[in-house]
Image (tube, rainbow, N blue to C red; front, side):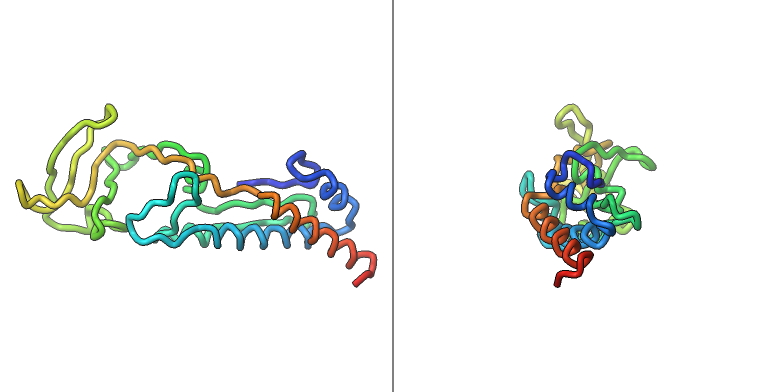
Length: 193
């Protein structure tokens, strides 16, 4: 979650002074929040199942509904704005990190189109295929069939490392937008326009 307060050093000085001088900066803060929310949502590619976003790009939108969790909040005092996501996965997507198995010994990571968005309990007749070590971690394939007809559906592993996909930032063009919103609000307060 990004917190923007009018006195923060992240806010350009000219905008900070203008926002503090306004009697009611909340409409301009909410205007920036709505603009930021729309830009972030638009920047998230709608990728087909199993397609990954390019490194350093916003995460792909799949079945998680993550894009609907992009929110902003401009409290009534009007001197601050919170931008971010209500999703508990948002920090991992933004900063990267490790997701560990909690309720089971291993995470089940889908690796086939038919298993994407599903869990192993959604299938019948699954069996363990190859068990191997990669990167110092023990992994196993879970799928259908045996021997040469084995079709892997999931990789079982105790944790997974997610690379950062920073996308919760306020770029220069948003600050320019915020400046125009503050100027519009100042005009309304003094009765111009």
